[in-house]
Amino acid sequence: MFKFWGDGSAEARQAVENITVRSTENFNWTFIFILAVVFYVYWTEVKNKNFKAIFAGFALYGVHWLYEIANAIIGHVTGYPLWSVSNASTTFILLIGVCWELSMMFSLAGIISWKMLPDDTSKRYFAKDGKKGISCKLVGAVEMALLFALFESFLAGTSNWSFIWVYKWWGVLPVFITTYIPFFLASNYVPDMEPKKRNTFLAVEWGLVAILLIILIPAGII
Image (tube, rainbow, N blue to C red; front, side, top):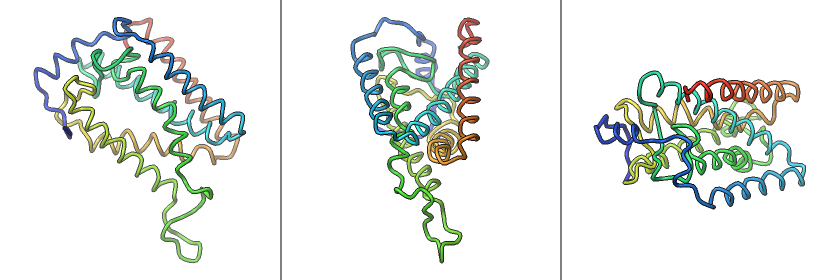
């Protein structure tokens, strides 16, 4: 059921080679329903003026897109990305490593992570007399990263190749450390940044995403 590392098998390589990015062959109406749910969540936060939750969502989602673009570039250059999703497992593939359902989940993951933090986000665990200790934001990021890495190991073991790891050195541990921890560090720390720094971070992050997509998709690289 769970798969912890890529196996480099011919089946895995063939599954990646069969992927058709942005094909509408499997498109169905769940695409619209999921989009409606995401809109509902974000506009509820706007109505409630819970802007930090929105910043958390945007921060993680932007990092997610930068990672997916980098993964697609790796796939273009080396022949195989670090991770990929199959056409059989989704209604629509955005880039070789991310489908619509997965991407929409990540659009909400930052909000979820932020809401799971204590009301006082400056709280530190194991602190003595208010000194030292471990930030609840760091603990929360590690916990969420571990949960997501383990769930990805389940997806990698599904029979319809929901998630495909080709490289034998890529699996749960590198996903946990190099991917998910940065995702949730962004969602947990960016909202509490000084406004100017926070706005600069989000503007640079999303500006870079937009530039890369505008250049690389028409060029046929991703």
